Image: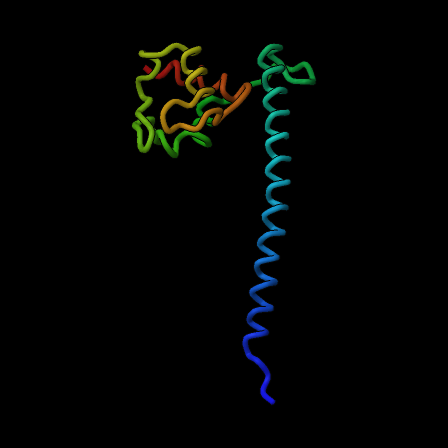
Length: 132
């Protein structure tokens, strides 16, 4: 008798589907852990914002331009001329530092909210408010 050739393929397909389901559940658990970690970091960043220093008591110094280049330049351009997002080369003449902090936190339009948080948001807002 000949063996049925469909059985190995069905077995491989079944194992593949089972593997996808297992990996999906593992990914969901990791997503929850990442979100919880982000919330803890945001709370720690808010605590630093209120105190103006880090946990060791030293004043924090974050380079707003560097944070912008690492997190925002892909949409707003390396030279603030705009790409996907609007140009920010004269944002300081239109918005205050507090306005810019709120824009970063809320993420208007297609911008995701909270791209940078805590003292990094403060530093970027301060740097952008000087762009006139």
